[in-house]
Amino acid sequence: MLSLVTKDLHFMSERKRASCLSQDGFEIHRGVFSADEIESLRKEADRVANEAGSACVRNLNPRSELFRELSNSPKLREIFPSDPLSTVRSLLFDKTPQENWPVAWHQDLTIATKAEISCEGFGPWTVKDGVPHAHAPVDLLSQMVTARIHLDPTHAENGALMVVPGSHQLGRIPSESISEITSSSITCECQPGDVLLMSPLILHSSRKSSIPNRRRILHFEYAPPNALDSCLCWHEA
Image 1: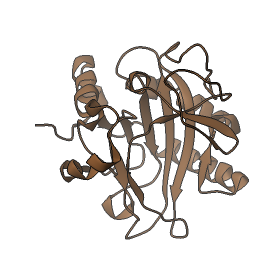
Image 2 (image 1 turned 90 degrees about the vertical axis):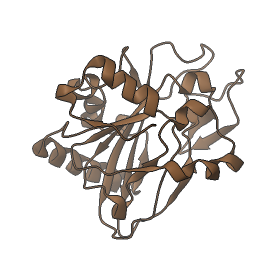
Image 3 (image 1 turned 120 degrees about the vertical axis):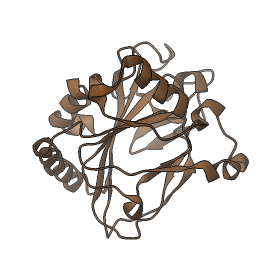
């Protein structure tokens, strides 16, 4: 039976850590960043969001040297499961009392590229904030890892992420089949400084906050070097 696995990174072996992420599709690392580090990241998140004029900011790393350094920081690198990974997409999410929305059950199936180029297995294409995005093959998505750094208390009443453990092993899930498997979902409640690692293919969602407050999350996506088809280039690589 698959279950939520929350481990202190200081006591987790490489084998166990890889097993949690590969089997369940996610894992939570508690207290990766200190209170002082989180306060600096909050201030930078607010600066970037104010400059962009949005509670959700795409292409985060090009906007902030601090966030570029963070995405490659040793504290993140040492909780990754195995091989070296490169940052390929970065976002900021901020639910507030004024900006409060639900997110339906879905998988993260798209990648951001420098240009829209016809390439076997990629598509359909869309453009988000001026950047081409394409649905990617499952083989590529299964090699990727997402790190979500929590800057605020994120509990069930404040829009914490919900996931279906093991659903990343099902490949691309048809929309008509989603409701059949969400009954086994788990809510990933986190505190400031916690990091949630997850597969882009895990089925996940979040409710509209019933007790709305700040819920800033830094979202970084990673892929192995040379994982992308040679006809395409990552937007942020």
